[in-house]
Each structure stands twice: as C-alpha cells, then as structure tokens.
Length: 423
Ligand code: ATP
Image 1 (cartoon, rainbow, N blue to C red):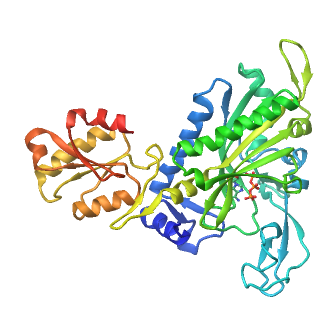
Image 2: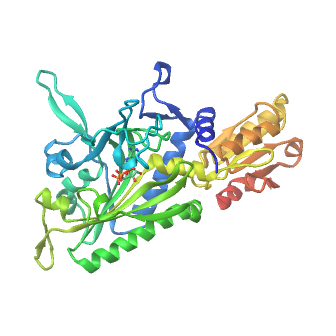
C-alpha cells in the first residue's frame, strides 16, 4: 500500500493540497486545496449532490450559515455533550484523545502507562462577534446537521416535501480536535456532506430506512471506484455512540494508517427535533408527531484523501492515479507533438479551445511527449490528445487512454463525441 509520505508529496508537487499559511510555518489542523485539489473536491461534491438530490424525488438541498444562534448548540446537547476525553503523557507532555490510544502506549515517546486521568474536552470552537466589549460568544458549527434541524419547519412550509423526505447539505464544520493529524484526515476545519432523512416514528420503518441508506452510501463509494476490499462497516458499540445516536455504523477505509472512518450512518431518533421542540403535523391525517431522523454524514476531505490513496499506483515506468473519470480534475490534456513547431502549436491551440468548451482541459507543451504523459498520469487525466504531422494532413489526432495507455486516431470533428462517450 502507498505510504502517506508519497501521497502528501504528490499533493504538494502537483497542486492538490498544501499546508495552510505555509510561508509562515503553517498551522496545525488546516490545509489548502490547490488548483487540482479544488477540482477533485468539487467533483466529489457534484457527484454526491447528483446522487442525493437530482436523481431522487424525496430530497431537497440547503445551505445554512456556519455561525448560528448559540442556543442551537445548547439545545442540541453539544455545549454539554460534544466532548472527547483528553489525556496527557507525563513523560513528553503530548496530548491525545484517550479513545485513540492503543495499549496505553504514548504515540509520541513510546512510554507505557504514563497518562494523566482523562479530562473532558469540548470540541466546539468559539469565536467572538460584535464591535463593542463584551463581545458575544458564538460557535463555529461543530456539525452542519443543526442547520437542517432549525430549518425543518421553513422547508416543510415553503416546499412540497412530505414525510418521508430528506434534506441534504454540504458545508464547512469546525472542531477543536486534540490531535489533528494524518494529513487531511483529522483537521480543525473540514467539510461535510450530509443527509438528514425524516421518517415517521416507527421502529420497523427506521430499521428499513437505516439499512437502505447504509447500502446506498457504501454503494456510492464503490460506484466511484473505491475497491470493495478496502471498505467495511463498523458498528458502534453502545458506549461509543455520540450523545444523539440510537444506532450508528461507520463506513471505514483501509488507509495506510489503518482502518479509518470516513462516513457515519446514524439513527438520531427524535433527539434533535425533540430538543428544538419541533413537531410535524401530517397534512392529511392531522396527526402530530416528532419525526425520527436517519443521517448519513460523510467528510469531503476524508473522501478526497481516500479517493486519492485508493487510485494511486506505481507501475514500472510511471506513477498513475487511476481515479474515476468523473472525479479526475482534468478530463483531457492537449499537446502539440513538438512545442517549437508553430504549425503544430497553432493547430493544437484550436483543438484545445474546442475541447475547453465541453471538458476541463489542460494544455501542455513542456518537455517531451513522454514527460507530458508522465505528468498527466500522475494527476489522473483520463485522456491525452496529441497533435502531430498527420493531424495537419487529415485532421485526425491521437487519443491516449490513461489506464490502458493505448492510442487511437480520432477525427477532430468526432473528438467531443468520442470523449463524451468515454467519460
Ligand atoms: P472521529 O471519530 O474520526 O472523530 P466522528 O465520529 O466524530 O469522527 P462524525 O461526527 O460522525 O465524526 O462526523 C461525520 C464525518 O465528518 C466523519 O465521518 C468524517 O468524514 C468527517 N469528520 C469529522 N471530524 C473530522 C475532522 N476532524 N477532520 C476531517 N473530517 C472530519
């Protein structure tokens, strides 16, 4: 399996991910997505939105604010219950989350049984608003979910949803993590993609809905190319569940640092709507009840990381990112066979201008053709189009496939069609 060092180096070298504020020494727990990283992340989010909203009839979207009235976090239980147990190693004074320590050994200095008693540590990040003192303390949202619950009534009143239905959202969340680390896996600022699916308070319906979404979500990752044997479910034991959850499963990926959660499926019951004192009146029967909620909560950053890790392959003569075509940052790259022949460059620029209207397209005229293939393989570009002397004679180009490395000659006027079919 690929080492994290190689992934981190590739991300930096090719413009996927950089340390945040790097010129000032960086800041622990924050990362910036470069020109290719932002494309990858946008593609993941677009695929998710398509699957969760556009392909369905029972889910609507939302984009709630990051800062909310702090009463939301009191009602939701986060001020009181959103806590991790913090321990400190008495030898090296490093701090860790107690539940992540294996065999009571300090992950930093290797000393055994040298930890302090666990202290409760709240994960909510505080910020202060206002122009005069005292400023008002508010929180950056610790999960995007609460924006959905506080808008439940608005959405029921302003759209035509009927239970069962879902509200989907993508957005940033913030947590004061004790030990950010493993690259973008655990950060303080991160992005979530979540569905809250509202059902009647019925045990059987809840079980079926839970199972349905469990399968939908793992199926989505597989459909975008993650190897099945690198995916598994992990059931949360009773004492592991968050304060709001009645049942919880994680989808885990077999990362270079071990099996790791990147999406949670939670049965939140009536916890949140109940705490916000919200009820639902069935428009047909007039019954009033507090709906139950099944939640799917994935991390965009963790998904991006695992899509990269899973796609990374070293072959004899190249590094290739065999990432799903729909997630690849560039869909196609265009090269003139020789960069110093103006007739090839001019023709190439025309092909580039044509393709750019339909696909996110790269232009590359550096070095020789072999180096350009190498560079495009490393960032996962599915197709490379080369303009050569034959192009000038008969208006055909070579199209090279990233995975098979096979080349085909295609007429320029067929090129968009050809690529569209393949993509
Ligand atoms: P963990 O046990 O790893 O701290 P969690 O169980 O607290 O995660 P949830 O509250 O279920 O995580 O959040 C849902 C999803 O949000 C996670 O599966 C993950 O993809 C993402 N996520 C949560 N915390 C972080 C973080 N600190 N950095 C990056 N992504 C995160």
